[in-house]
Length: 256
Image (cartoon, rainbow, N blue to C red):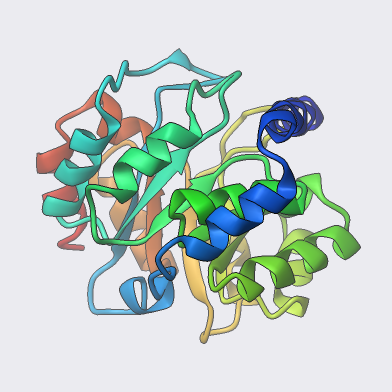
């Protein structure tokens, strides 16, 4: 499943590249306002930070929410205490677009993560041109040489690389790459099963200086408390927010 998601995103980016060559995209990226300092917004604090996600659908759950106006939802997130916004731009299974990211960037003043199956520099340039401040890199889908190269490119463009892991072995790879923002995803992207305790099992492998992000399996306040007690600095929350009362949930979550 994960391989298919990467192949689909690569194919879709190649189609966009046919109409917007790399040189033109580089020019757009160079003219975009400088990326926000996401580390500053997500730095460790007395309460957990929330990375709130715009998520229309997923391979495991199907359609979740229509989200006809992503900018309005992102504003609700930011106004309700989210420290950053995650925008899914994968179009086949998650029904997102880069246009969503552009709309959100024009509306909020907190950092924005481009969440997609990033595998090449063109996709990273797209993220910067659209106004992203953070780019997701998934260890499970990339070899070490590729993820190292892409991480350097993200940073050269002034953005923050958010490196996602799913096991102790992947955490060690991310740590060796001197990752500043490291996520542990409770959802296995091969089986789509979740293990809410995975973060607690492997968080000890992550240096204290690194921003530790707990991803997936957040349904309610108890789950946020669970992740916070385990040592999470940030929780990425999507499904609960798009299917529930985002304002109320965020106000609860950001008090933990």
